[in-house]
Image 1: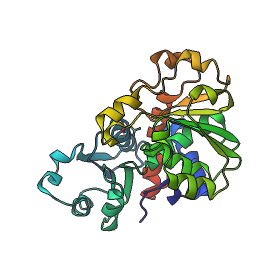
Image 2: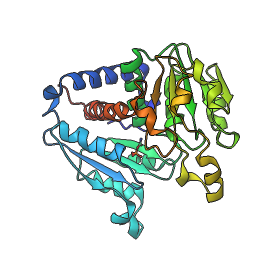
Image 3: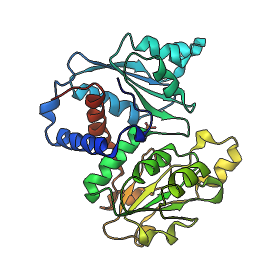
Image 4: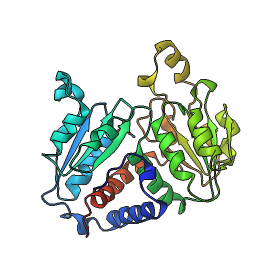
Amino acid sequence: MRHLMSPLDFSVKELDSLLALADDIEKNPAKYAHACDGKILATCFYEPSTRTRLSFESAMLRLGGQVLGFSEAGSSSAAKGESVSDTIRVISCYADICAIRHPKEGAPLVGSQKSLIPVINAGDGGHQHPTQTLTDLLTIKQKKGRLDHLTIGLCGDLKFGRTVHSLIEALVRYEDVSFVLISPEELRVPSYIREEVLDANNIPYKEVERLEDAMADLDILYMTRIQKERFFNEEEYLRMKGFYILDPKKMELAKDDMIVMHPLPRVNEISVEVDTDDRANYFEQAQYGVYVRMALILTLLEVQV
Ligand code: CP
């Protein structure tokens, strides 16, 4: 039995197979419509979510399976003090696979340790969000045709943005990838990512504060929201909130084939006027999240189609 806690739990070869499966699912949905007949997915969300929870549920329903779960800790027995470990152990009596999101880093890992079924980390605090990374990799593959030879700009809250941490870890395994890290000083990528991931793998990167200084070099611009829920201080959040706003004027500085991605939700960091720019890909990115989660469910349940 296999869990997914980090994008590194899959080798590059396994990731290639997973992305190829997601591509086939997109092209031939009918072929997979009964692949999970009789199977149940549990979604245990201790933190708010729209995309991750609903795309997991959509994925299982599109595979012919069924779903159960809770969307807030307060409606589960966590409100009575039950541990994550006990909750997931019990859920594994009711379902065949489980996706868990939790505000505490490492909680899905703890939940997986006594589970009888595959457990997927659907986001743990400011740490990792591996299924968003699978979504991002599929989006890049489909839109750019490759995962190597790319310059990726990551912009916004690089300190608390777990999607950024997972994406960097996944992309450093591909050839000739470089990063431009665009953030205010206070929200720089954590030092463990700089030292243990970027420096340790000799990955070229630079850190800049102004989005305008990076735009012209980028193949991909990955915008992120300032993570209000991770700030200890409301005043500090309000100071950071409007730091980056991608608008049509800034888009004029970008290459014609640059793509704009965002894990969503956005608050105000991408102006709605950018939505009609052909280079804006964030809503398609959300759609790819369904195909890749279908592929992940099939892979972890070892269902052959
Ligand atoms: N991208 C993402 O994780 O969105 P949700 O918080 O809505 O699940």
